[in-house]
Image (cartoon, rainbow, N blue to C red; front, side, top):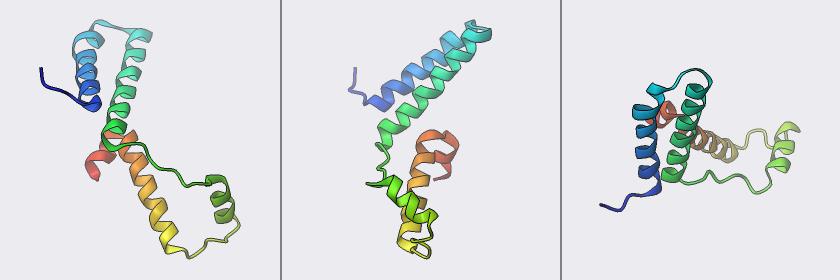
Amino acid sequence: MTDLDGAALLDIARQTLLADIVPALSGDARFKALMVANAMAIAARQAQYGAVAEPADAAALAAAIRAGLRDGDKDLAQTLLELARARCRISSKTAEKAG
């Protein structure tokens, strides 16, 4: 057997869950299994891309933005855009494909 990374292992387990287990379930059990499959997909993408680095003092940064102290800060705008894209890439398979 070849060495698989965490993302690949999660993907295999998720595919097995969806193909072999979910079809036999109904109702609440099916819903819960699909939630687990979705969580596994998110965890696999997080393992693949790494955790999203948050700003050092997010609360202070948010307060400064709300107060208008960072208006016109193009570097901050670019950083926040990249942070939002990284979060979307991890949380949504569709966003991952969109790049």
